[in-house]
Amino acid sequence: MSEELPAYAERVLEVVERIPPGRVMTYGDVAEWLGEGGPRQVGRVMALYGGAVPWWRVVRADGMPLPGHEARALEHYRTESTPLRLTAGGEPRLDMRRARWDGDPDPGRDPGGDGGRDEAHT
Image (cartoon, rainbow, N blue to C red; front, side, top):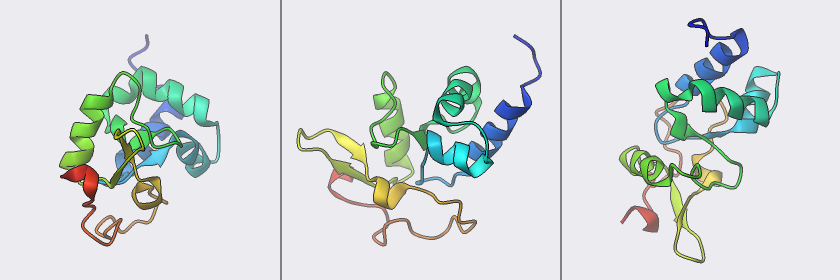
């Protein structure tokens, strides 16, 4: 593997680093933000190079934590007060309506209007 990142990977990682704590973007959101590639290309970049950036802030569109990394991701979500909700089975899932970041440059804005707290944070 080359020490220098491919240009597309650098651009993906730069977007991921912009996502504020407590917010998330989907793989497709990142690709749309860049105006190139798609969810699979972003996922590939994250799989190969995402360990050095806040990888837990890039998620699947269904709000489920990254398979195989659920416990670590949930620790980050709780630490950052990322809005969560409980599924019918009692599993925590991201509350995508409240947690999804649209690229608004004001990261101080409260994503949920209640400090990001709900039943999944108790």
